[in-house]
Length: 311
Ligand code: SAM
Image (cartoon, rainbow, N blue to C red; front, side, top):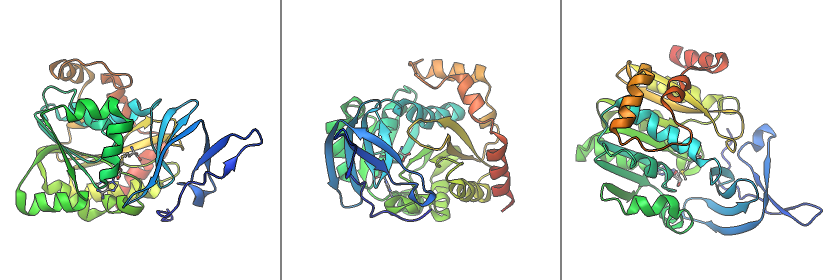
């Protein structure tokens, strides 16, 4: 994957009818570009860490891109946010202290705080602009999150934060969720072995680490590298899947690592009971059956995971 962290989505694309289009440039090196017609640019800035643009899209609604990569859209965010939050929490079964690295849009934080069994949630985001921007443009997430006593927002590099936890503060978590950008720019270090090793040292016994791990069809190396690191650090390392329309390329992989091999085999019946205990809140994508099925990998992805395990 080429490092195009300086890329700025070209707003230059104007169709013959005068409509503006924004292109996702994440897969330029693969010769793949997805373009979105723009009804209105709501916000655009170069922050201390990356290029940020938010626009109204006729079908997907509000769309956020960072450095030419789609982060979140109003229409399909629920799929990714629910699967990144509920799968590790229900697999664990008794998670009280949760850490999110990245996630500045507060979408996953909002899902985690739906679990009344969670006692404390810390979010460590490198870019303060993204958090301030979420308060203004994604109040549906940020408002309930910042109003919740259990929530703490930290502005820091995720690598530095977990290194500090592991070395000094002694802070430990039951679940760590890495809702990062892709392995370019500030997000690159969050796909490194030293980062995963530091995360492991910050987990309580039986803790779970989940990661945003790209789309295997277009980003196979990302999944290979992460799962191979997981297998060296944890008793169990694999991924689970969901299809998110604006994460172009088919299945989206979410890395899953823990020392408790039983967790990903938790039965649908047990997951349903844990959902009730957590408050039985409504969901639009996650169900106990979807969680069980998400770990059933198609052959080409299972082969990638097996190859990673042999590395
Ligand atoms: N769901 C999106 C995806 O799959 O691409 C990610 C959404 S979230 C907005 C990604 C966040 O990770 C961004 O706000 C970015 O600033 C943050 N981030 C990137 N590198 C980071 C780092 N080293 N430490 C903490 N946060 C980081």
